[in-house]
Length: 271
Image 1 (cartoon, rainbow, N blue to C red):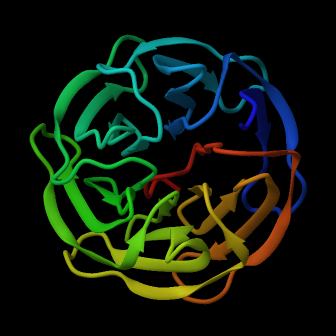
Image 2: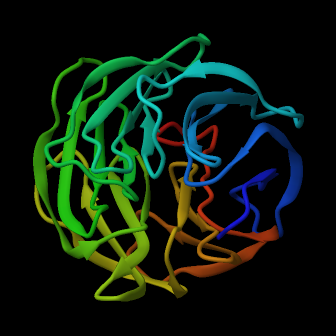
């Protein structure tokens, strides 16, 4: 069983290099998710010895330990979060959860109910433009769902992925969303696929990671997509989101880890 970790690393997305220590979260956990605004990163729920609801936050420009933010509406793990810089949305989770929550990133407090995914699943990815959020695969499913972030309500079918994926992650520019790695056909995969967030439709092949990885974690600065962690992995890869092609080595995390997550202060098309 993987250990719960409290480590926070950071990188400068525009400059390939190894990660540097940022600080610690208060509650060591795994199978968590994160989202970020231009100023703040928020860690949401996860697993300790059971599913937890707590959220913590950091000020991204200033290294240091995380502080309490509030709780999601239902304790769960293996969920996925994204944002439009103002509002964060948090969907899915273990036990085939359909729950979508939302928070206002600048204001600490508990999450509120947003609606439901079209299909419950965990270990999924999420990405966003400034207006629309998309959840990608998870639970060995190929479903892509979307919502309009500024409103509330249930998700709508977006299209299908290239196959049945689990243990995956996603990131985006303001135009394009990427699903990165995961688990399909009984093995870890190196596949990266993409969608145009404003246009519903099926995913298209983008390229490959430097190595097959499951339990990936992804973030972006609107131009460059970063894929870190994995199953007992310290590898960090990057791609240029506007140009399909294979990933390139970025550097290494400070330690190997499992079931991690990531966010940035330039995500969701905010560059």
